[in-house]
Image 1: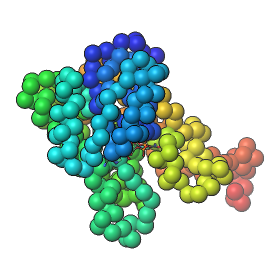
Image 2 (image 1 turned 90 degrees about the vertical axis):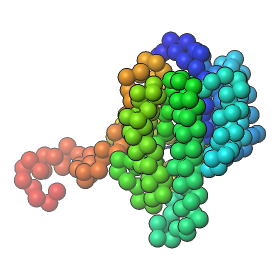
Image 3 (image 1 turned 30 degrees about the horizontal axis):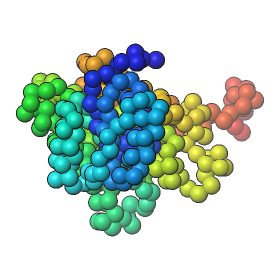
Length: 281
Ligand code: NAP
């Protein structure tokens, strides 16, 4: 789909890059010529992913243990990354969430979501942005958000709050940091199977065919490579005029909210009955 050197010469840091969508983006960035850095709390997981990316692409990412909730640790991460050369792209991908009745959430549970998802993204963005501004370098911040930024999301309310906060940061900094040569962009993924996201389904839901694909206009979930390709484009120079924008990649799922989608299950007979004025339908 892209030139194999689309991201050549770029240094890209992916938070939460050891698993799921973060690992998929990291692999694609490496395939397209980038030098990739992975950050997360579990060094062994990062190193395992880095080794498999190295085997597949010939470019082994560097692994950095870091808890993005801790601003000092994030400063240390940025210093470690800078040792092998200045950063060009930050991908805010690390996040946490779980399903819960909102009125039952303790303050600690709320913090457990806001910490990595909201504060982590802010700490990383400020640490990267300060350096770019001090050194008069260009940069890109890509944040992985959610369609909850458009629809809200019952039962994962702290995550919806955090993702909307990061969207506000993305739009605000587009204006404030755009003149400094820094673009801020975002992706709102719909359902992409990852151990992290799928663990949030109810037990047996996927097996019974009641998972997100059943409600998706395209009848399927997303493939990791689809998101990784979108991310590669957005962080590349080819997207140099896209700033402050969030791109949704969900098969149209977030638009299925009018109630009219009940009609998707109607048969030709049902439609005929409606036309004939049969009010039983
Ligand atoms: P995932 O596999 O659970 O990835 C989350 C990553 O974040 C893990 O690698 C985790 O690594 C890291 N992380 C969590 N807390 C951290 C912390 N305090 N410091 C540093 N790293 C931390 O989930 P995923 O499905 O790939 O999700 C990736 C992103 O896509 C998230 O932002 C998620 O909200 C978003 N998203 C996913 C979907 C989907 O369907 N998959 C849909 C919408 C949005 P450690 O535990 O080792 O730290």
